[in-house]
Image (cartoon, rainbow, N blue to C red; front, side, top):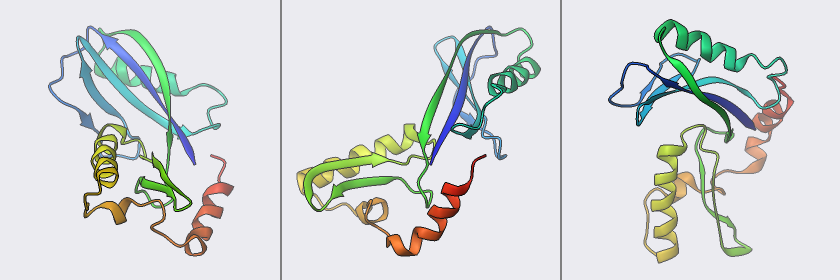
Length: 157
């Protein structure tokens, strides 16, 4: 399924020296870009933000943490979520031997894209990669996963 994450960029906020992710289900993360603090979170399943309150949630948190900060930018991103929590990286199908896929990063695109680059470049170069089978899009039997896919597809919020 798809999930949307919301982002605001703050000026005049405390400088950060790294990327920070909360341990709670809220999924907030903080990182620095030049002189801005990037606050991400308020994630929701795509289509379930009918009232538009996700930016308000981030703004409230930003005001609590950085009372003097000014919102400079805001945007949202849509992410593919895999059925088992592991990205799909590898050959798209046996019938299309030169087509590769890298998706289902579960909101970990910054790290998963690097893993994808390593796995896919090894595959294309004919180099054995110990992680290929773990991330392979054909790693599971569809009949064994159909229950989870139906449950996931039936959820609307």
